[in-house]
Image (cartoon, rainbow, N blue to C red; front, side, top):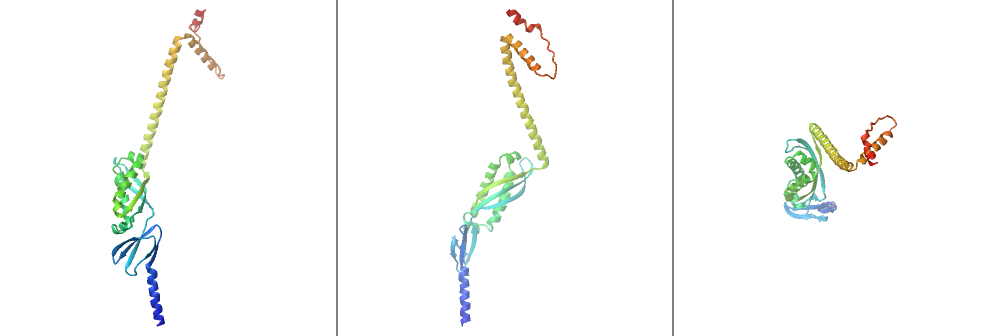
Length: 247
């Protein structure tokens, strides 16, 4: 009799312990009673009816997952490999359990197809220069389609774009040509400004012929400061004519 009572006590004690669940602050428990939804409970202590209630835990922390490199053909027919990082969290545990078999796998797979679809609709230059707007487009599309699953997509960030080697060489050649073009434009602008200053100087000297003589003598002084060579300058008599006429 004692052993039977002990067995019964242990049995009911085990049922009682199995019916008590403790959920963390970031967890929710979706309760089913005989297959029918009761609701989401937690955090804290949750008591279940043994053999009748079933609980599915759902975490509500932000989940960060890496989207592996996706082969994408851009709008201008360039093959690239793009990988990204996806951040999302469950905001409605009931929808996450009832409306989709696996919200984790579904969100992950849909993120891959959306990334390929969005990047395939733009040209390569836009992929390289407009990452912020592309990230926002992918995030908005994902967030719209995962809302019925109770999932909120916080962000999508393109991490890396891998280009074919021949495309890398072509872009390097294009970049070099662009740098040379800018250098020539800057040099031409400098020549133009120098020419304008020379025109102003010529006009000033034209009104004062003595200035030309002084400039000539200044040039001789600058040349004479170099001791490693000997320079002979012919001095036309016309240079001194203004001084002679002034006397």
